[in-house]
Every structure is written in structure tokens, then in C-alpha cells.
Amino acid sequence: MAHCPLIFAAFVMLGTSTLAQAQQPALPVSEIAPGVFVHDGQVAVIDTGGSVREGERLLAAIRARTDRPIRYVINTHGHPDHVFGNVAFVADGTVFVGHKNLPRALATRGQFYIDAFRRIMGDELIDPVRIVAPTLLVDGTLKLDLGSRTLLLRAWPTAHSDSDLTVLDEQTGTLFAGDLVFLTHVPVMDGSIRGYLAVIDELATLPAQRVVPGHGAVSAWPDALADERRYLQTLASDVRALVAGGKPITAAANNAAASERSRWQLFDDYNARNATAAFSEIEWE
Image 1 (tube, one colour):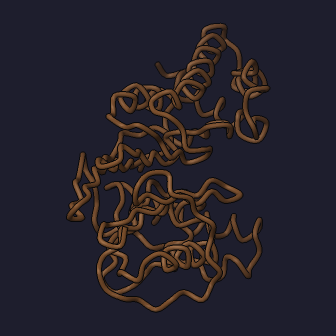
Image 2 (cartoon, one colour):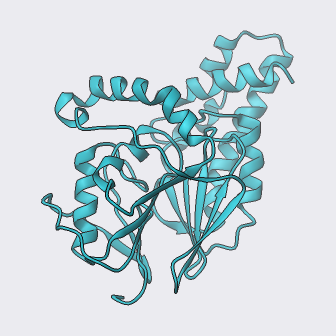
């Protein structure tokens, strides 16, 4: 393993020379495929985490396995639980990579996210957070050649968000899907219901063996899409029926996808928001 590039669930690619050991205790990580490591936290973290402290602990986990410099940090989209640990990885030679829309998304919403998370998590965790935007942008696809390992990055149309990016480790068939894939945690839609469904169909054609979802356990591919596809199809169908029946948007918030409630964690926290967003989109079809 010491002679081959490593991938952690923070999408950190490790190179060849030495950096100082991080002083935070290491996060527990598991090797899901040769050279591919995942940390499952209280929220299933696949980028750099929801705080600088979490990013530092992930860095400590990396340093426990290699002293080679970090070449890339790839953010799958701009939501706080995926990017707030970025500052822990800022160093000479580290390139931050993201969807072509991600710098704009972070510039537009970054301060709002910081303020919102401060109210939830407190000053101690959020004071160190800084918005770190990518400088290597993906428009379409981009291959990162790490020598003995190639990563295929793909920027997607608006779906979960307007800056969704996936990473396919071609050597092991491991797909890092970001929040384009939810398992157990009800899907969250901050983009387009029609776009999400279209992207899922195209995602399913990717030649992966396993997926690391944005939220949920590492799972076989493409079977992992089944529950999410059913939820989104049900949501869209219910909303279309309400729109056709002349019902108000409040009816969507209260009733759309209600049949899915028992199948998902945090359903009541997110479904009403998903339903009103879907209603606002579908009523103009």
C-alpha cells in the first residue's frame, strides 16, 4: 500500500513527501477496497466534514497511514457537512477540486451556511470555518491520473444541488456519489426533482461495483439507487396529482410522498421541504 496512491472518503489523494503530523486524534476509518478508506461519522461524511475539527481528525487518520503530501481535495457539492472541514487541508501543493458551479454556490450561500451552523453547533466549532472554493473546476468530465490509479470526475446537471460531482475510482470500481445517493436518510432536494430523477437513471449506467453515498452505508451498485428512485418517483407523482387537482402548495407539504414516511429516517424533517420545492417546479410544467 505504501507504493500506491491512496483515496480517503474525503477524496484526498496522497502523493510522495512529508507533512507534519496533525495533532487531532484520528477518526476511525475502514478500507472498503484496496487503497480506498471511508470514515462513517454521525453524519456519513464523504468530503472534509461539517467542521474544521472533523477535518483535522480526518487528516490525522490519513497521517496515521501515510506521510505523503495531499494532492487533491475534491468536494462533491457545496453543502456545509461536506465542505466545512476544507480549511484543515489547506497547504502548499494541495488543489481543491469541484463542479464548475461550486465557486458561485459557495460565494452565494457560504456565509448563510456558516451563520446557520453557528446557531446549531456553536461558536467553538464554527469560528475556525472558512469557505475554501475549488480552483480546479470540472465541466463535463475530468480524469486525475495518480500514476497507478485514475479517478474519473463527472459534473452533473442540477439534481440534488446545482454543483453535484461524482468520483469513480476506476481501479476498484468504487463510486463516490456525494448526495446524489442517499440510503436510510430521506433524500434531500436542493435542486430539481426532474433533474434528480434524470441523473439517477444516468448514474445507474456507471461501471461501479460499490458506492459510497453521501448519507448511508457503502453499498452494492447500482442496487443502492432503488429506494431513492422510488421515493423521488413517488414524490413527483403525488405532486403532479395535487397540481392537476388544483390543490395548494400546502397540500403537497402535508401529503406528498406520505406513503414513504416509514421507510426513511428524518422524513418529517425534510419531506415537506422537498415537496414544496417539487410543487414549485412541477406546477410550471
